[in-house]
Length: 367
Ligand SMILES: *Cc1c(COP(=O)(O)O)cnc(C)c1O
Image 1 (cartoon, rainbow, N blue to C red):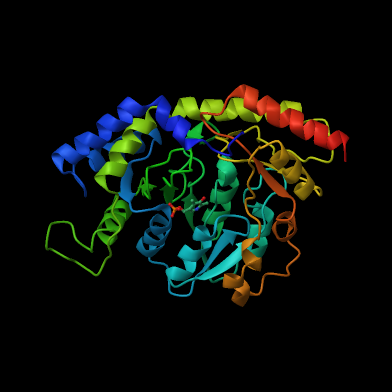
Image 2: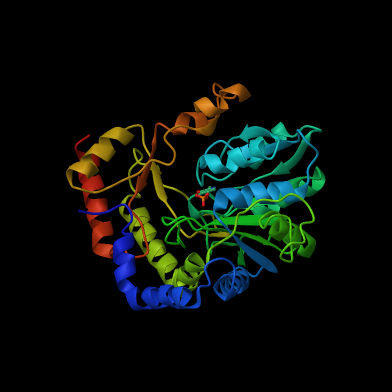
């Protein structure tokens, strides 16, 4: 049995550190705010080379709070990729703006800059590049386009902890970046958690206030905010796990290398491309094939778990019918039938990766 992602195995490998971190929080009753959250915020800001980091309750809240803090005119258009998790898009409408879906690149699956530029109107005020599957977006092009059209840039880093663009960690290149620490992410908590990062001091302060009832000190509420805080238990777990992130990402890279090499010779399986300017962290390893369902079945027979990210492109979801982009002939609207995510993770063994390659190669021969 090869699991899609084995979090129990990861826990076993660092059990004493995690158990100690959790009991320290309980001993100190540092459940909300407190030193564990402050410590993680500082460590994570340093790790991503960004001036400010604040913990929030989850990544979706992070996006919503970031959009609110940017204070765009009501009804602004915000460009979002059609192939991403729904949270990226939901945050736009929740903040009172209009989602405009754009296509993604058929090789690295991040935002297609050509398509973004076609969709810019005088109402467009922001763009949310998603470093999808752990592969960074082409940030020079995003920032160039953003500067030309006065767009704010919100980096959705939920799948890309530690990824680099031209030697720089992602997150601090746009106006603001958000991370998710959902348990299955490259850096995952033991529950929901998220973070906002930015080099803009004033923006960071505003986000911090929005996430904490519009206040800085205990009862001094400056405006109506909300409650979206990271809790101490999650922060302590994340600090313990952050020390292992590079090593886990390195293992993911090795697994991806085995897949790329082992599956590289057949046109019926299209492999993801790691661009020369990118250091991806392989949150997911997504192949593409007209015979997707066949390959998924063959892997299942050998007890190899797979996933599909995402089975329905966002414009085609019932939730987004009102936008009228479901039948646009975008690559993303067609590719959802062909995408297949292979097992990958920081605790996966190389022999398991070879097993996946063998099974797929046999399946290719038997088509
Ligand atoms: C996971 C994810 C989110 C949302 O994060 P949560 O912590 O689950 O709210 C946002 N965007 C992308 C691309 C994600 O993968």
